[in-house]
Image (cartoon, rainbow, N blue to C red; front, top):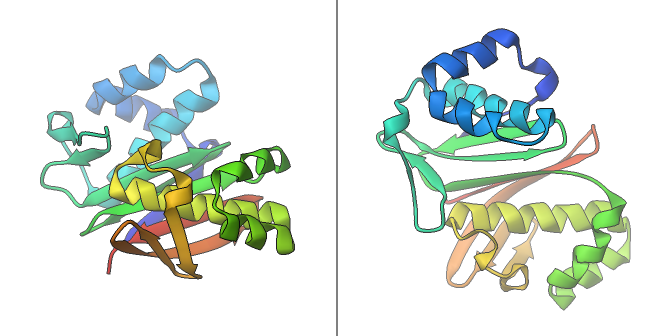
Length: 189
């Protein structure tokens, strides 16, 4: 498994031009986003993906039934962005990644978690614990490719490195980044 994290401040005009010329569908998608920050995160996601897996042809980009992308003949990958950060992970098995800018306002979303998670969050350091749980759950459902069609209450945190969704057991690596972001990568052993 390999991953890269970067900020939109690292994106150069050369990167943007490269995506425009070589990945016109991605550039077109980015161009229709309403904010410049969104345009840049969309472009940077492909820049990082190409650094990890090499060149690919856009005609080989497919989507599963839940719209999770994959590229024929390339490793599995997943992309996440929040604020100015973009994170991309690749592996030889399904993988999920989530990066979140830590923001106290999001604590109101705790109602989407089960009681065990809510108790853990309330014990101490509520904001950071909330984002730990959120990032783990979101990365797990992104690995599965189900997105939020899987209720977050159904994603069970078994221990620090193990998550269970239905009959699927998923491993994770979580860290709190110094810049006020949480990051989780979920993978299969």
